[in-house]
Image (cartoon, rainbow over all chains, first blue to last red; front, side, top):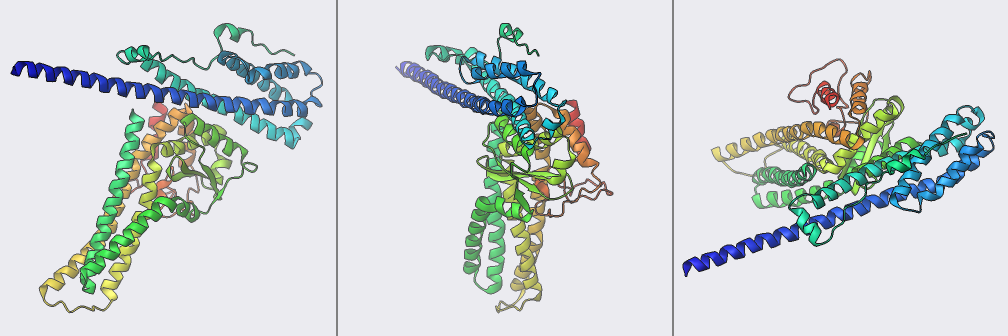
Length: 186
Length: 296
């Protein structure tokens, strides 16, 4: 009789511990996932900002850079992908535009009049600020994705993640195959 | 997990600091109560006073510190790179953008203050903006952002105000003991003992407070260096910034004082010639910090 009660209590204890663990893990997964979502929206905000800044830049630069029309149309074309498409498309567009902008700013050094323009200086500062904000937001997002994915993949939280169908998230980066097609020519 | 441990440790220590403040002010109030002949009145005023001072320092300590330091809001038009860097590094650290201030001073220095990441401010000197390279300035900002994320700012802000108040009070208290007239008629040895105890207390309180302040800030700088390097992903830049700060020929920040010195990334009151960095320094040895950063 005493033995049975003891066994019963042990069973209850084990069940309680497991239940607590499930609740704890579930909540942790939820907060990790929310953090990833929040981090993603930070990237999105910066991509939109860049999307809005680019037409101004093109407008300012157009009059000076007569021989570099190619890179300007390239940027304009890629710009649309910043705000639509899948994550890896956005990442790809963002990478291409980073390269293209670098080229534009490098070329701009040959145009002293453009360099002296207040508007251009402001745009350059603003775009390079946005550029590094995208990099920081990306770093923060990828850190958080790693945290979430680790919890989803590691034992024993993996069991719970599977049961409640938590999905791993994608890192914000361009696919290897897509990266090759990035080329900016004059 | 490390970061969250550090945050809760800082929150715990902030509460402990407030409790200690109540105890010290309470003891001073008690002694003062005996002196004026009513322990009750002494304690009553001590508690009310501590309560008000704690609330003031918690909710507007940052504003006091900023105005004491003659810090003005950094306009984006005037300091686009500074504002962009702070915004970017706040994103990297996952905190809201803090308010951004500048101090008009040619020395290179910076500090952060506030009560939590939602109510925080980063301040840099114009010297830092003009004389540091871009990546060095960003590394310094990352260090300050690390202080904000860690809740170091809460601790350090409370310390500024509460330690300042204790120092001021015991000063007033001592003067009134020494120069004031005694109103009560407690006779005999007991009265003498009480007064002697009161004087000892008044002398000890600011020393204890000072020691707390010192023990609080030194380890924190190493931690913020490491966290800042993690946020900025470039420890070399911070090492270079610290070198520039170390070799600064005029490191003295005019608007800094003893109460706020420990907030800064490096002691703003140091004399370039004297390299004493002993028990009573508010900051760890800068060469040590550079060495650790270069090894990362």
